[in-house]
Image 1 (cartoon, rainbow, N blue to C red):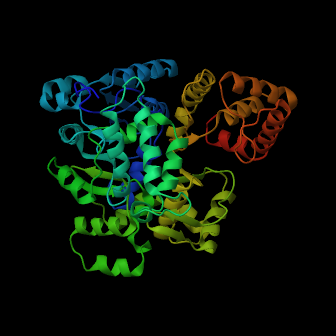
Image 2: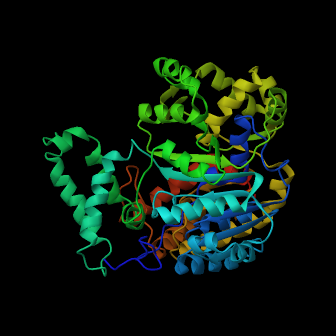
Image 3: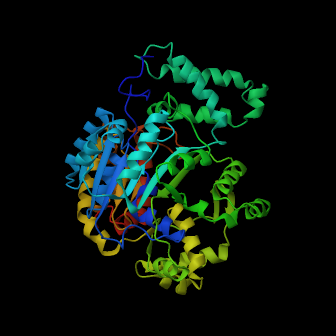
Length: 527
């Protein structure tokens, strides 16, 4: 392995995946702040704002947000020139005029405030986000990340920072160590070779796959499943996860202490289901009630639930709302249905364990919104469902997390519809040319929706009036041309033309009955 130079020990032998992270959307972050009794940076939907992404990767995430929020000004920073080149090309193809992407090193931005102001502008940002960076870089770069975030953030802004945490990642540290050692003696021409070797070696160290018979295997019974999962995942993701010299998950207290040195205080979590400690087991709640220190309480929770990943939201300053003000702001939020069908059950798998919602209450909430002629403000929704607004806000957090509802953007969302639909059309064309995108923009909820290429092509064909064999034949040809797999009911790749056409027809029928109207209602595509 070459000595670190410009990459500071970060894995740069390949590019990162082009993902989208719904929790970083401004509307989502505002809701998370309100649930904790804090005033969001924006007065309401449609208000102008500035948004900074530190470590924007391939740029797809911030490009889609820029399309969804045309009233915002977006800036993305990444030190990998290939990431920035890709992101700028995407922004140009999508016709985005409110997005700037810059190649820059966080250490340089920390050391040279004048250069930082020249690159980022003199005005503060309402939102600064950094997804998947903090615990994957060496500590000097991590400190620079926090320093730049603090210096760029407005006094009432929100800083989203996701990171790997202990104790949940203790079991995976052995895999990182094996990859690190193998990279030191491997040919850099095959950057995936150390990962393949480490996975195979760790599997051998576990012992019998069905009944681990080594101390290591017995200590970490879920490791075999994790290794199998990594073998199925995009190898670029696995590389970026483990093959960095600075890879170091932290306990929550360690991260909060490092943030505090840069005037960044923990405010909330973008993982909405973690905002309700009343859902924890009673014994743990009693223990927490006896602990006055919030950092210690957070650490106790993480240890108890074996936390492995956090999406913390920090602030430099905050306007605390009175209970009446908080209720007024929450009551004015608008919600609309997102998924076309109700959830099959109201059992939610969370880091706190399985949360079983009151089926009767959730069904009332679900039905009240389904019966409404369009989106509802939370106050009207609560009245229609006969649920107290404070309780409904908690239910909404779970329904939002499971994509049953979305935060409606009202007139601001309508103003974004035409631009987002044009961007979605272009994203689809790029996907057909084998671009690695799996999300489209839903302007009426200000967030992304995951959709397969086959679903997008079928929905576009149905919206254009195509149907039957003509539709499925055209879509099949496009999918095969894009190198996509047409899966069967169990996910197996179909190879026979007749089976592929049958599967696509079934998918088209389901879209026509359920999904097409859903995509149109969210503004993903035109009616």
